[in-house]
Image (cartoon, rainbow, N blue to C red):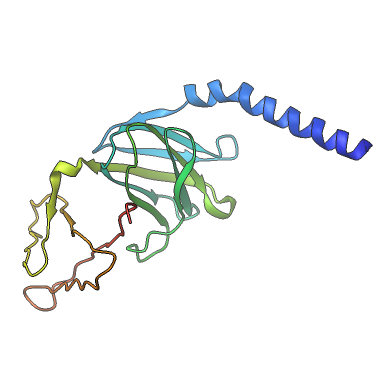
Amino acid sequence: MTRIRLAAATLLLVLLSCFALAPAINAQATSLVYGDALTGSISAQTPLGLYTFTGAADDHVTIRVIGITPELNPAISLLSPAQQQLMANDDDPFSPDGLDARITVRLPTDGIYTILVSGSGASLGEYLITLDGRSSDGVNAILPGITAVADFSASAEPQFYAIPGDPAATQMLRLAPDPLGFGFAAEVRRSRRW
């Protein structure tokens, strides 16, 4: 019985200290807007980078953290306005060296989102964080049987496409470079609505 009381008291103290620290943590958050790129560092004194941004439901958002110093292998986590984890990542699948982290998500609701940056495996060092986003108004629809052409010129903005889906039907997406041999990367995600 004593062990249970001791464990409950310890848990209560931990929870109370978390609530006491919450205003201090929020006060140290750096505010970002779409298009921002900032540097930061993870150290023994500051093991966590904290950022916030305001997003709207259905915004398409990409958060990328790139390790500047070779010692840092960054990890990121995205929290909803209710402070629930939406996604976490410590490796960018499009990065050849594995020292980047990326999250791409369509935001579920309006509000202030929180980004947590840390060092994977207790690694320390400097990083670059970028936040890119656009509203769903900037998304092009691709209808079945219609060919869409993406612009990969140096001046082109990132491009987003939506494919109206039918969960009861099989669909195929074919991506082909023109000219042949042109390298590109595409990321396909399923909507949360299905």
